[in-house]
Image (tube, rainbow, N blue to C red; front, top):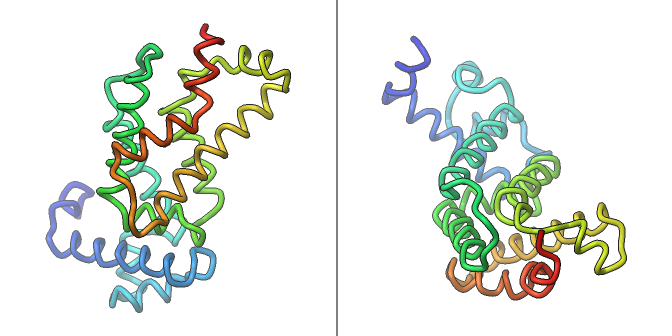
Length: 198
């Protein structure tokens, strides 16, 4: 069976969906590091041989999610890079949160406390780079605040990402529009970048 025919084969697609669902549930329940292929196959009710027709191991399965999230978010954030404007940044933030809301189970599992730390670091860097980094003059901000640029980047990146995680974890979450407004109010973009434009 070719790759394309696999993607359209109903049994193959259903099996892959069962594996993915089992994986996300297990990440939420016991954490990524504790999961084994045996756990996934038992929960998905498939054989190990069937699992290996889809993925090499749990890291390969996680990599497929990383690829999906990157592609989906980049598509959601198009058109490409745009000049700094508060409303343009806000639109990107709204789109990011809207995507997360639509894929809440996946995002909560993979980006929550029981997910893979290296995966989360890559996602943090990607989200920051696509949504905010292009709009900040780090050199100018670092000079204004009299701090090293590398520390500033890490501080801002981590702070924004933790707000993002906090929103994901809440049962009663703000709408994408509401959290975008909060995000920008907390962001260093609004008060500082105006004084430090390129």
